[in-house]
Image (cartoon, rainbow, N blue to C red):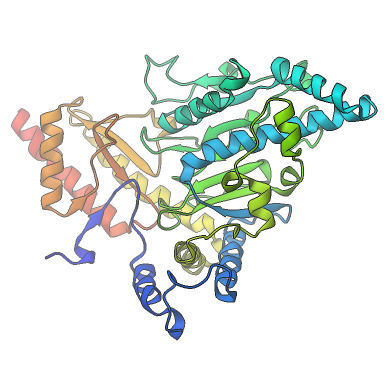
Length: 438
């Protein structure tokens, strides 16, 4: 029977965790700090639970240098839950801004305010989405579905990378081709937000950096871009300037911890810019259900309902481990390590182009999810590759069911030795495959 150290796991999520965190977690699951209770048993309203929440927030603030004007929420539902939460909360922000403007200009006449905002919703409400892979596509589809009772056309797909690439998600078109909703300073009315997925887990596409057209910090409402980023699968793998974003969210089960925790980093001013549910309903917009309602979750310190304290503690342990491992360098150290590990694998793949074909274009290759095909997608060869890999205890390499192929996920907890093991196997398989072909 293999030991944990024998197995090299490259699953896309749930993903590997540091062994030392799992060992501490095993103890905490039975008897946390000699209290005689499991972390799965303690009250989520206890002093212990509140300290765990505070300590995890503190570690995250240190890693990302999160400014004071942001709040951190722990939520249920994963990234898919936030597809809905983003729409419902950010549309509510947009409505409240319009309500305040109308109330000031119409001397608070409620009936006229309602009618004006209803008209503005139909004429001006737009949600901008950059679609670069399966997850951003799902997010845009969820937005359209949630707003369908109001009508069509509210979701503006400002960029769909398939349109310029024969229907494939393997590149990111140049920013000059994107069709973002113009802000008021540019003759439009602006969008409620601009949404993108920083790293596409299924397709292996990652934005190299924040797009320059979104790198916009204006506080003037007429020119502001509220950028929302799904960072589920590259969270804490590189430095991020949080101040450039309105909202960042990520499911924990990739780089942060285990399932059932979703982290949301949101600007505090957005939490206080929310109309009443009755006003939203009066203008025909759904109010966020309480479990997805950011202001309510924030007001209750993420403890409106029973949160999985054990899962939050695991996330905190992972974060504290990153701080200890990289010291003053913080995420700069983890970024360098992630880049180094990804380069090892891509270098092997590129050395054998007849055997391996990396799916995404070189400029947008993901450091986290390395997707490639064998012999142009030869299913028999890919099956053999996976079977032989399993024999060497290289596990979790099968591509997503929707696209097939091979996917090696290079998350933070994948050790360098496992990457080196995979690289050696890739070299060996290529050599043997080439010999057979010759």
